[in-house]
Length: 194
Image 1 (cartoon, one colour):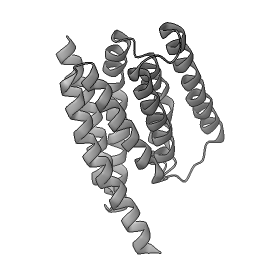
Image 2: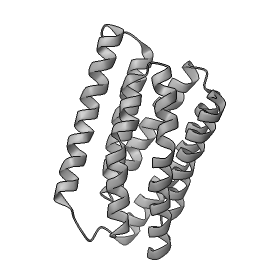
Image 3: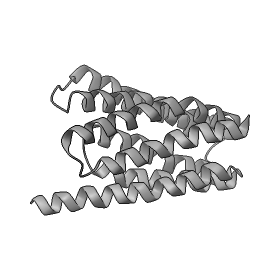
């Protein structure tokens, strides 16, 4: 079961990063289709990640994965509408969910572990900030989201190494390559356009 969950979650996550990175620099219609597929495939992989993380008592990371779904839905909504229809209520709901999941995950982890007592909790905090802020910024078409994804990938790869989830560690390192590619492709284009 553990192997199936690692493959399910890892492949969905890696596919998301590949689709996002490849979308950069594409013609508008293709870019939009790749991003829609990227947002959707990540959502499909969330249950596997949550099951794995809860099983290891990684409360912060698990709450981030579950709490990140609204940001993913915002990204999907914005991409479908080509960032032309701003839904203020949806943006507020995503912000509340983002901050709420941050608080929930940290509080449960602190309670469960009796404070900030382990390296895994510190890594989870890196995952938390990287994932939620990266997803939120990319959902709003801000290239700074790639930088937060880098933090998230390095933190999660380290956490998976500590917990001997080697498939997910490798997937995180592969994802990091695509995140770096997407960041440089995005920022290179912005510099060229100015």
